[in-house]
Image (cartoon, rainbow, N blue to C red; front, side, top):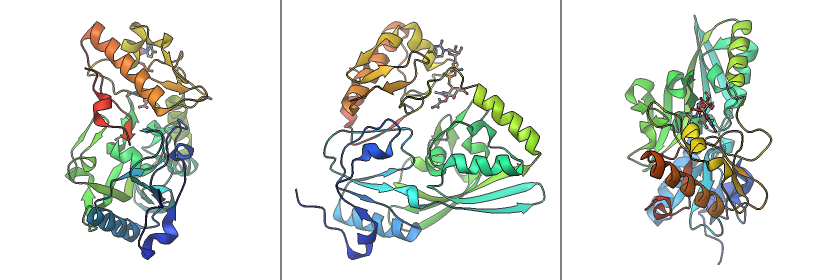
Length: 309
Ligand code: EPU
């Protein structure tokens, strides 16, 4: 297949022949038509207008830590947010505002907060990925989520226009952010609000947060929790009770440390992971009547592949 033609305006941003798996924590994912790496919201706007006018499918990749990307040749363009990084900090009384590109690594924001003694983001210790991905999935733990620290967001809408949102304009839920729903838009930058505190108390809260992850797998390729917790329960507990820790398909294995994690043990494909996840989901449904919802996002995987029956 000849490479996809892109307008001259986008040619400095384009990459051909890249395997998406090199950008995901599972290390899995095939080859998109091309990879576009926008440097700012104007690049995103131009890309979106072009993709929409040409009817080309596209998807957005942040830190690649919560996503399963299909195998083989993918009939879509992947917009990679990694170049939209950088932080700008302003302090107003007790409030600390951190404005950052959506592609900024969440860990670098936490590290700045830890060094300066700014409170609010401690729950995020150990959460990989970009700020944009964390906001779109309302990433969090029992101690907090991104809703609690977002002040404002800037998005590029599907017609290329810019929109600004206050956190209170957005509908939120458990691992849910209204910006990711309905109209197709891309988060370009966010302003987080933390508060002035002491280095010592932020450090203690970060340590507590890190220790709450003690039972999770380390040193293996995973994408965090695969399923959302059902109301009032833990997906990991239900999967464990169903014996899923013994399940594996190809190079994909349910973690023996925590049943809501799937590990890549070598030549694992997206197909292995999806077959294994569906097998786990079916088991919990058959035993407990609860259909677990996916927390991970899917790119280049047909919807039908996600139905259990
Ligand atoms: N459990 C088992 N077996 C397992 C896993 C868990 O019996 O294999 C039990 C635990 O013993 C505990 C209960 O289930 O009694 C809850 O487990 P855990 O404390 O590990 O918390 P979780 O609900 O499974 C959530 C988040 C994690 C976050 C932790 C710690 C979700 C889906 N998961 O896990 O977030 O790190 O709390 O705050 O909300 C993620 O979202 O990717 C993620 C890892």
